[in-house]
Length: 291
Length: 220
Image (cartoon, rainbow over all chains, first blue to last red):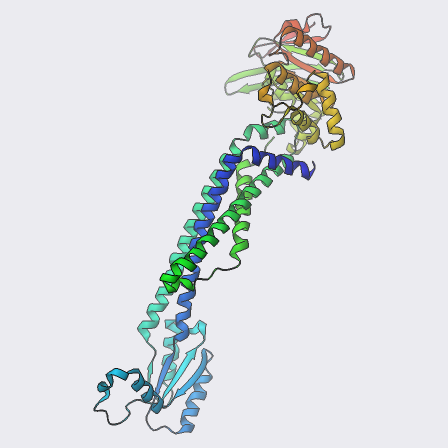
């Protein structure tokens, strides 16, 4: 069997059953589009929540009247901890100035305070993978035991909330993606199956005339792959239109949308998924060819 | 070429064929006859393995069918040209392509396909219908396309199930003449028909079936 004959059979069939095939292409495109929108949303929301911990720090308040050497020793001890990214020393004078500037219009709050009540502080930034409630609690316990450390503050509740939110988004997103993918797979499979179910008699005739399994399968696989690929490209086109609409139109009203990112690998993942869906649909729909 | 030894076939509790034994020699042309439901079509289906025998042995072109692996079924069928009772033409392709399928399945070179298809269509007097689609043809014409498809690859065996079922007596005689010509080239032909006129005075062997039982043979 020549390949060109298989391709000719496949494309003749695509053109002949153009309306049913168009329906299959649209179904695959819609399914992929919905799944891709879910993936894109989850991806972006996850990206935003991942940015928040970058602002997270652990503040180590030092005891009064420590010598520079003692502060250096404390800094060196903390630096040895593998989860620490960097340490910044904030002298009590700087902290006092910053507090004053942040209370510009409500300075009266500080009236009556004759001297600076703030302690010297070490601001510790942790490595990304160490920013979770358990790890921070552990390091905080360790820091408390260092001689010269007065108090530790890291916004325990804030960290827990962010961590839960991020975890929640991941879980809900993953669940949504699984549901959407399963739905898309089922709808695409059903459509392609209906498409090929109509060809049962054709397949049987080929078998009776002496055709090998691959002679029968190959044109159908090409047909399924082409339909899937077209569906994938159409889905991608829809996604790009939707993305630029969100970015340009919605983004101007709600600035958070203007930072939405379109992962480049979507542009080949979508057609590739369509291709695979079409082939799988065709393989399942043709089923095992028995003589 | 074709041998049945005590072959039986059952469908649920119905007996389609009961202990049938006969043989058709290489290069012979023979008829199977009997009323509707006598088992003619089942007998042909057993030969090209659309059905499997429940009892007995069948040998076709030196292949023992009960021993045949699934992957060898296409090999068996490539040696057989079949004219189906319901023609089994593909409505979505034209007459030329319908006939050419038999050659393409056998991997015949595209340059040869054209001339062979035209020769076969000429033999059944349908050369002028090359570009027509099966749905645009009469029943008789469709039957002749099915015959052209069965003969085009020059198989060693031709099985024809009621090949004149939809044609007038003149065309019918023409079809039988075509089969005789093909048979004269050495092709083994087995024709199933309930029409006695087809084999009357043919000088060919006629195997008779009666509700699944072998009812003897005669010379037509």
